[in-house]
Image 1 (cartoon, helix red, strand yellow):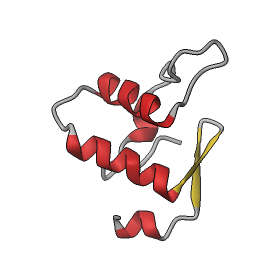
Image 2 (cartoon, one colour; image 1 turned 90 degrees about the horizontal axis):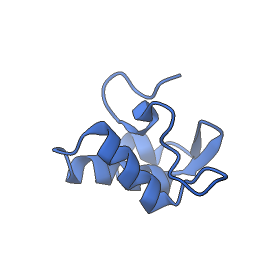
Image 3 (tube, helix red, strand yellow; image 1 turned 135 degrees about the horizontal axis):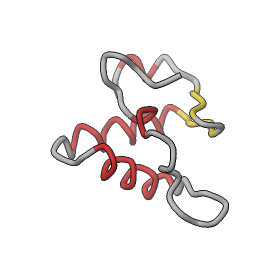
Image 4 (cartoon, one colour; image 1 turned 60 degrees about the vertical axis):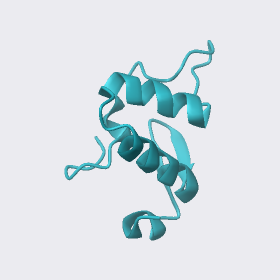
Length: 76
């Protein structure tokens, strides 16, 4: 697990609280599938974490920038 992730207890993005383990899953997915577009990565991550809208769709209607572990960090 990445050292930056180890130091987190949890993080909240778009109203959902994510544990260290879930953040590690996001990180692993992004690094495992670098050729996927942001939209495809967001869909995959939402499926893995079962992050759904009240109507049952994947919660990717908002920009998926919260999912990336890039140098600029998550969107605020």
